[in-house]
Length: 96
Image (tube, rainbow, N blue to C red):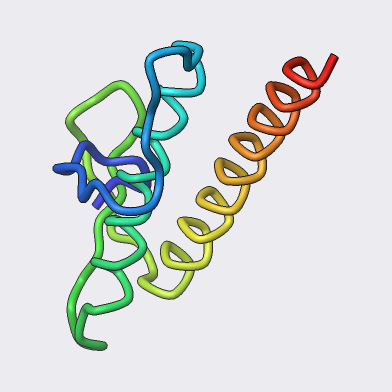
């Protein structure tokens, strides 16, 4: 399973507004995807196998479930942090 796989969006948490930047909307979409990846990995049975897709190809390699889960959580945290920084910068622009 790729760590940044294309999954259906769950629509929870983040909403985009009309005045949002394209980068902010893209981040919001990536955050939703990453939340689903983390949730799917969290709910897997211990004996299930997880595969990582090699970047820019259709080749998959066996990966450790716990490593994939922790990596996916780290990616999600980074995306949320970046999204929050954008929101904070937009708020400071509005105040000025």
